[in-house]
Amino acid sequence: MHHQIKTFAVITTLSASFLLSSEAFAATPGEMLEKGIYTEETKGDLDAAIQLYEAVIADGKNAEAAAAQALYRLGQCHQKKKNQTAATIAFERLIKEYPGQKDLVELARKQLPAALQVGPIPWEENEFLHFSFKLDSGVKVGAARYFARKVEVEGIPYLTVGCRSFVGRNSSSEVWTELVTFKPVKSRWMHYLFGEAKALYREGEVEVQLNQSEPSITKLDKQVWDNEQVVHLIRRLPLAPGYKATLSVISSLSRGANVPIELEVTRKEKISVPAGEFECFKVELNVNQTFWYSTAPQRHLVRFLAGGVTAELLEIGKRAEQPTAWADAASGLKVTLPAGWWVDKQDQKEGNRAVYAFVDEDGTGLNSIRLQPLDGTQEKGVRAWAEQSLKNEASEHFKNFAVRADSWQERTISGHPAVTSLAEGLMGEKEQLIYTTYMLTPTQKLSMLTIVPADKFEAYRPEIDKLIESIQLP
Image 1 (cartoon, rainbow, N blue to C red):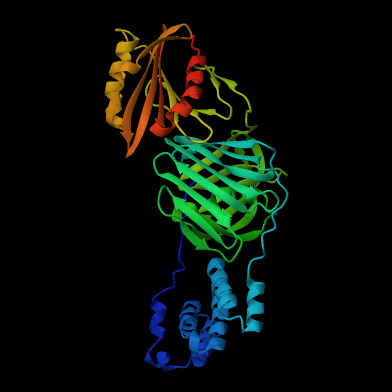
Image 2 (cartoon, helix red, strand yellow; image 1 turned 90 degrees about the horizontal axis):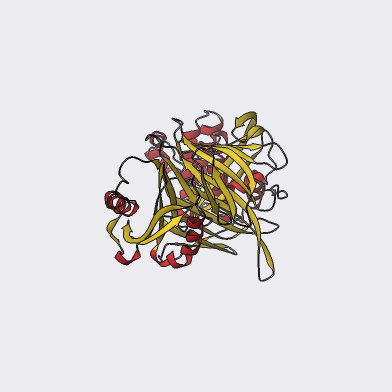
């Protein structure tokens, strides 16, 4: 899910610790265990019982049987408090640390969540789900496409799933998974400003690297899932009202933190989104996120709420394998998009201005076109207007901005006068190349901006040049 999951800790109340008086500390582990059982079952004070059990566990080296019993009881207390994550941690500790307590280990195993049953692939090959993101106020802040497809490397087939989003800046993620089990093999998450995180999954461990830092390794003792595949993973679960599951999720952005995520299908609901009306399973996650998946066999994600943002399904489609024509009827703008690219029209408050984000497939560059009615700023010609616009706007976004003097080119695009130029500048601490196009028509003015990391520009430019040449305006 394209929004960061935060690790959380189980917090017990400090007030109960006052029950551990000097007399209590002097008690043996067995006596403390009995007092904990009495406090839990007779007095019904779960928080106080948890404190007593934790005291027994802390002295586990001297009383293994009592410590194992306390861990089991601790897990039960957390279950009564409906904190399955904390309960699971207690039961797993018992199994790992006290294998000799066979009867308790067997009981603990029965309390663990059942292994996930991953069902058949419900999506079509090359499918995408296109979403619009809005704040609670209704203001649109961006868009995203969740995708799924098959790839083959050296004769080995893989599934890849991920997300390509544009919320003011580029973000993209992709997870390579085993074809049958859906277990993650490797993943990549990239944000235009924050950098890149990579994860490599091996037997019993995951290696994570953030940008150019030294990789870190997290040991694993259970099946885990990559954070960026969870949206698709839920589509493959046996969803039904009352269904519950706990996912062990690796967050590469948190250097491989293993985050337990509890989910529950609370009910069925009919909801309407721009893509249509759907009967859905409402899926609640314990990280304050809610998802609606269609009850149809395809299990399309239809809506989700996370971090103050509402995402609603706009379109279900398939990736274009060839360049495709795109047009906006309102402005008359037409272009030919490279394969896999898409357009997000931005909400604007300023007059008749229209702004379009042209979203590439892997998040390499930022591309936008702005259309405005003629307003007098262009009276001295397209070159003078372009130079003034760059001077006015560049300082807001870049440090050390400078246009390459020999890069100006006069062009004719769609029968209209135009100029292009290439500039350099820093966005944050990263060197960028800024490729601009300015064009005038009898009624409108168009400016196109492409921002690309300097080391990727030459490989990226041919696609942008094709897009520029394809621009049509009346």
